[in-house]
Image 1 (cartoon, helix red, strand yellow):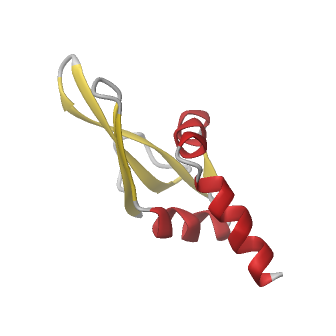
Image 2 (cartoon, rainbow, N blue to C red):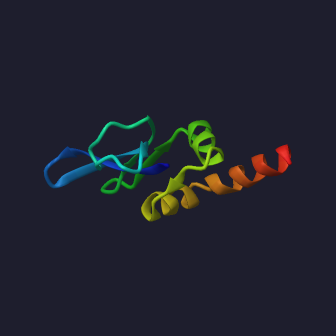
Image 3 (spheres, rainbow, N blue to C red):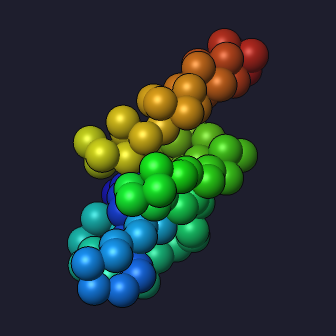
Length: 88
């Protein structure tokens, strides 16, 4: 099973996170399938590769709680629901 979760990067006391699609059995710092975004909690900046995120969500990837909140703030789930209604 694939999850969308945060992968820690950056310096000590200056954490920056990548949003990655990763196998559930992998560690937090393990090998990811694809990098799909970036989150800086200090500057409160977010970059999302929305087409890649939608692709993984359509394939059944589950976001973690934190990633879910980030995607919800960016209104990615509205686009996900629109894509689902187009194909059904």
